[in-house]
Length: 545
Image (cartoon, rainbow, N blue to C red; front, side, top):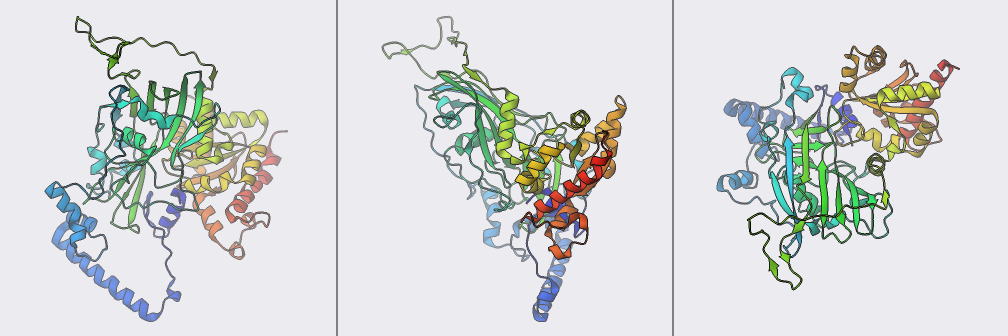
């Protein structure tokens, strides 16, 4: 699972950067197939090629694109079941995948709050494919993205008690993470289907998150296709009556509907906070947003076919704003006097009654930065190692006279905006690797785009040099490097080569540098350990005494 593994599959058929096969099927080699089976397969392939050519002449490129999106079994015929999405669109009937949300019945005595959505669409020029004018990208493929220019619901009213899922479990300590929605996937379970359009019905604690995310777009998937899924939270402030809860949510959106092919829009993460009473009858503040401090923060993946084995394109881009915020504290829907009688919510002058809220004085508090780190470690155990910003890592390495373990990627390592999934879910979170990195290295990871910007910045020649030395060694999609504090790269390995090595049998590995160690059963961990130790062997003698 992951961008680097998928890119390895791409390289076998030499596509352009970012293109891959969506499926991960294991095919038999030709010497495993019988001659009769081979003949039948070849005849079928020839027949399919002729049918495709005929359809292309009849329908044209865009017409064949639409036809193929409905022809889910690829037999070049549209069955009634395959035509059903078009029938639903033409007749206006409800799609079969629609559902009723879990009931949250209104209560006239409860408090409500208004939440506003702020949305600025993704900047197309930040996508890698914009550099060649989106050459080879179908106009229809990006239609869902281009048409998404505003939030689906600019504002919505919520009951305070609907936010009860954000309350901590009994006895939860300050800063101790808990799962609101647990992740059900791992590198061992694989990933969920790409070929879907409509989210499954949300259940339990998923309902409020689904409702909130639906303000941006009508098709949010509360559980992502790739691990880590879900939502994690921790307490950042406590007093006798209130909590402040910080949260991190991994969710994504499906921007297409039939007859188009699926287009997945996966923000790096949603984070935010809520201040609410301990009985969830009052919400003082709420904010949810996609962080925008890095140059890229969204992964996009779209299919070019109607099956899991269809080609998939991948790209990354930047969305300036995707945010929900409460317009003020929750207030009673109905105001009652001491006798229980309804009071007019307007003064004789016609103005609304103004509520005055007491200042909350916290008894325990945790900083936003520390809470964010703890949530990050809960989602990504590999972050038990501190990964410093690029230039700060080299400053620290000079101060401590250590080597730098640096990972350079197309997309972010520590969020859902693609790139490095396999790496972070396997070797980087294994105990032997965590121990060696903490003891012997200063670690950092960087986006290629950010180092390119650093290299072009004339104001700091030393930072220019550091970025240039890294970029000289980089190959798509991920490069792992061991460096001296002055930036000199003493050892490096590409993620694709690393995956090729770890997929071989031990007797097939020729290089002594990447031979398997009997100390570790997992070949990936053993190989990465060898990579780090070789970096130490080469680099330690070169450190200044």
